[in-house]
Image (cartoon, rainbow, N blue to C red; front, top):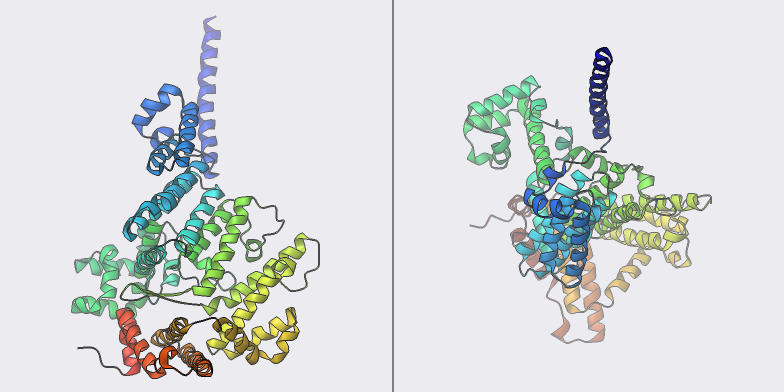
Length: 546
């Protein structure tokens, strides 16, 4: 009997021990496959657990709080709803809908109750940070969270519906300029940087370089970017070290690491994914000072982490692809963001905080490829042979885009590219109205746009072309600058000729073109950041203001 009991105890201990190690191994697999949930006591406030969870039970507590939340929303009690949603987030952190509700409440409902730009921006930011920093780490495969995050960047910050949208855009751009560098962004350096400080210092030359900086009482991680930005304020020894041509790879490597590290910590973004998105065979030169680029990033990441194909063609498959509603919405955000970037993706903040915005013709080839990809997927989904166009569903959009693209290339003096896309338009979508020729058609297209403009609109249009011309000149885009100035003169002359035909009084006359040109130069010099402003003065032989 004693022997049998001993055997039973030994077997029990063996089974328990085996079970323990099996469970550990299973939990390890679950963690590697992102199937685990964080401990509730870590996620939830202890007082909340004591007062609510332990008294009525977790499921009942969440049901009760959710019902009350809906009522508060209907009554417009948004701050009360925020507190209620926070409780649900803590009790049920793997319930994506409540995270979506909470972020929307902050970014949309509470923000518009604020009366100043800083207050509104704080709540908009609270909304997207809630998703980015808390919800997504707890639910890394929940695509609805990525869609909601991308939508806040695309619509709340990137669109024009909010009274303070310019303020949001400027705050985002300024924050990103500090990280990526401006006007010469360091995307390539950031993408090449190792993931952590220890990996960076494995390079003996880098470790030695960092040691020299530390010997000069410089904290590389805190001070290095400021040193590069303000070289005139550093000592001769430091300047000699960082300006030594032999040390350039080390300077670049350290700068890239610091910027990449700040990007990961401050914005939770991976510079390598950014580099992938900016490749020529993807979406090209995305500017991450723009909210639309952030929208593309998070929509893309949501599709990627939820197991979708993120090749170029797959990202532009929006017809009968079997995607879920939120996956399709992520793709639509990417498409809409690219359209916005093409229309107004050139973005510079003036010294007065007024943004100068113009189209970005670099995205014409990107969008053209998107339209062709849409057509290819549409044909495949409908069992048809692809005819090389955007397909029946996207035909009108592609035609309108091509017309706009041709006019934009023409305005910017890129006659070679205008001709290229004119030939594409005629080949894919032949129309008798194109028989007048490219130049005549472009003039007709622009003229129709300008016919309804009054004096103030024409004045603004001419000044916009002139200011963009000198901004491009400051940035070294001489070809575009000359074309923009030529276009400003053409619009000016066309308006003045029409005005003289209609009435000869001075009431509707514009100032002389020379005066408008001089005014544009003064405004641009005053408005551009110091480096670009100084560069423009030098190029125009204008002495610095004393």
